[in-house]
Image 1: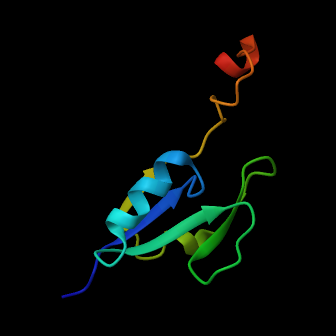
Image 2 (image 1 turned 120 degrees about the vertical axis):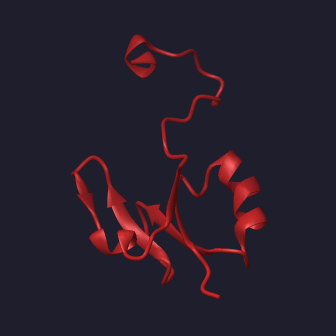
Length: 82
């Protein structure tokens, strides 16, 4: 039986660090990242509106965890709240 493939954004986030070990071995994992280094990592450059479309090949599920870091201890600005 073929494993389903999960694409994860924000793979270096606190939540991802807990989810990835639960999925490893059960699913094929792919990651969108600003600095791809591994075979299963794909470029995602939000600022320049670029994404490696190969990241979506054979993907069954997407777990979107990317976003602004909110727990760095600094107060949220009005812009961050948007």
